[in-house]
Amino acid sequence: MATPNTRQTLISYAKRALGHPVIEINVDDDQIDDRIDEALQYYQQYHYDGIRRTYLKYQYTQADKTRILSNASDSGVKNSVTTTWKEGNNYIVVPETVISVINIFPFSNKGNLNLFDVRYQMRLNDLYDFSSTSVINYDIVMRQLDFLDHILVGEKPLRFNQHDNRLYIDMDWENDLQVDEYIVIEAYRKLDPDTYTDVYNDIWLKRYTTALVKKQWGANLSKFNGVAMIGGVTLNGQQIYSEALQDVEKLETEIRSSFELNPAMLIG
Figure 1 (cartoon, rainbow, N blue to C red):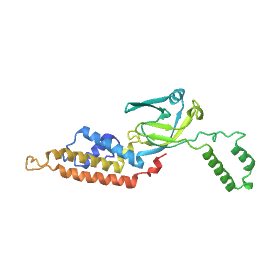
Figure 2: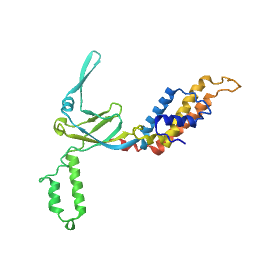
Figure 3: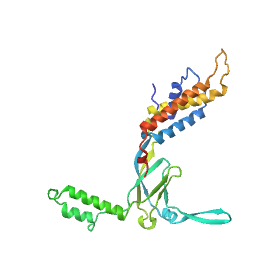
Figure 4: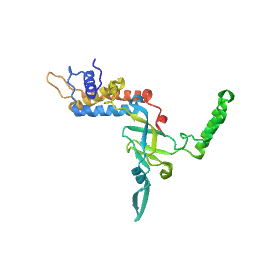
């Protein structure tokens, strides 16, 4: 059996699974391409092997600052009353493959310890000899410092929608971030099957693709349902469609119950 590792080999696999070349599969190439796109989209949306947790960094530019500090305007009219609204452009554009942003690294001086930093002084004075200092006390103090930082500084609220590819960060862009500094986000990103070709050989994806092609096949044949062919053979596209529909529903239930990540993990 040939292992699917490209789009075309996955198409060939699905056709063979349905009986080709012994049976003619009455589905147009464009229809098959649509079903492949549909299968990949569903796989990347719900299967934990279709995405990857990653970290992305972006360098803040002067052009970003100029755009962000300006406002977009919109107006509404109701009963001869016109109102004008302004919306901040406080967003950065992320790659289309990103489906969820769950965290952004805090904007603070934690990474830049200096002589006057409280954590540096504590380590210098108390941790020069671990034999004389309790690690438990150190852990409690660090937790307290982190809690104070959370209360006094807080986290930057995030808003993200994968369909507009905009990551909104509600913060003081003029003072919290300087030009040429980096923004680092934690996100989930779709795997490109043309780069990671093993995706095409995923057992669930192969079965789901086959079911979608079968469903399309049945939908095509159902237009001629009951038509007698040469030799007395009668087409029964409705039965093929019904069987495929059951397969699709079963596989979609399986992926949501067995392979989907906890939705809370995908929300920032």
